Structures are given as C-alpha cells and as structure tokens.
Amino acid sequence: AQKVTQAQTEISVVEKEDVTLDCVYETRDTTYYLFWYKQPPSGELVFLIRRNSFDEQNEISGRYSWNFQKSTSSFNFTITASQVVDSAVYFCALSLRAGGTSYGKLTFGQGTILTVHP
Amino acid sequence: DGGITQSPKYLFRKEGQNVTLSCEQNLNHDAMYWYRQDPGQGLRLIYYSQIVNDFQKGDIAEGYSVSREKKESFPLTVTSAQKNPTAFYLCASSISFGMSYNEQFFGPGTRLTVL
Image (cartoon, rainbow over all chains, first blue to last red; front, top):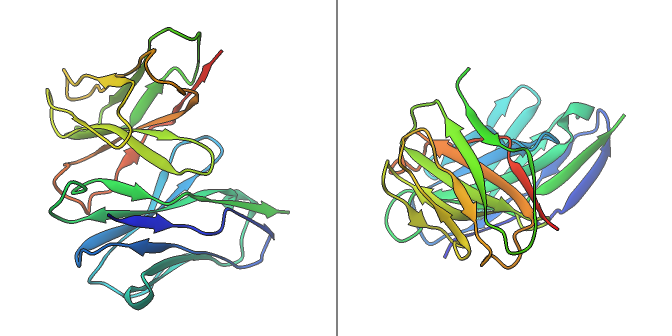
C-alpha cells in the first residue's frame, strides 16, 4: 500500500525566512504522480504542483520551489522569503498511474501547518 | 466562474439525524470525490464517482451514502450510522478518473458538527 508522510506537524517562521516542508512517500509502483496542495484558512484546497515519477527536475515558480529525489522518496517544498499570506496547511499527495485498487486515487499526507509571523 | 460549490458552509446535526451535504460543479468534469478531514489526519476518501450513475466506496465509506444522478451534482448523506460524523467535508472533481495526472479541484468545504 502507498503512504505519504509529512513529519512536520507545525512550522512557525518570521516573514522573509525561507522554509522547507518535507514530504516522504512510499509506493512499490514505478509510475506515479506527486502533488502539493495549499489549504488557506478559507478551507478550499488549491493545487500548487504536479510531478511525475520520471521527471526528477527541480521546479521553481516564483518564491516556490520543489525538490524531487527518487533515491530518498522525497518531494520537498521550499518557500523563499516567506510572507504572511503563505500561512496555510500544506498537503503532499500521491497518485498511482495504473493498476491495483488505489488506481486514480489521491493518498494525502497528514499536512503541515505553516504560520508566518510578521 | 467555473468551480465547485458546497453548501451549507456550516451544518449542525442532532444525534440520530441524517443530513445531506451538497456538491455542485460546473467544470464539466466526469469524476467527483468526497473527502473527510480531521485534525492531524489529512484527507480521507469517503466515496468517488467516475461517471454519472456510478460510484464506489473509498477508504471510510461506512455510515455514508451518495448518489450521482447528474454529472454536475454529487450529494453526500451522513447517516445516523456514522459514529463520529463531526468533521470538515470536502468535495472535489477531476476531468477524468482514469487519468492519474489530472489534479483534483476542491470546493470550499462543509463543516459538520453533531450536537
């Protein structure tokens, strides 16, 4: 069975600090997709990024960057120069490409609560 | 604007009552999902529907029921058999269930409290 672990339950930083959210996953499949979602206080999950298991290139989007390493089964998310508006719960999720009873479903980590203080 | 709407935002239920949570999408998506969120546990899948008139149990379906009579609607009923229904419920949709790379789009959620 697949599993996603976000070991950091809560992180608190001061504005302009860099912060990294960790995500470790487990799966026996060789083809899968990894996602990050943001859940602001309003409650709605917002899609941030998708990465497939064959693409280990790091990605940067503005202040956000993602580091995918298959060797350590990790897909970490870094926010550079954090801002108060980054305060939210962040979820990492895994989707298997084909086969098995988990096909097409998202398996979520427990989430990391990020608080950015002014 | 295209998106997913859920109503009501807050819902209070007495023990022993069934309640129905509404979920509507105008994204023309085939697949729809219901998740339950509890503090510290992430999101857990209750039911999902790949297409109209079809639905399957997720990981925690006991005490819940759904219907999918229209493509845009996927209501969730929390029955009296659900022993601990107080939670935040999120509805989601995606273009197609069979394409695992498709991200899911989420509604704003309904917070259910049992009194």
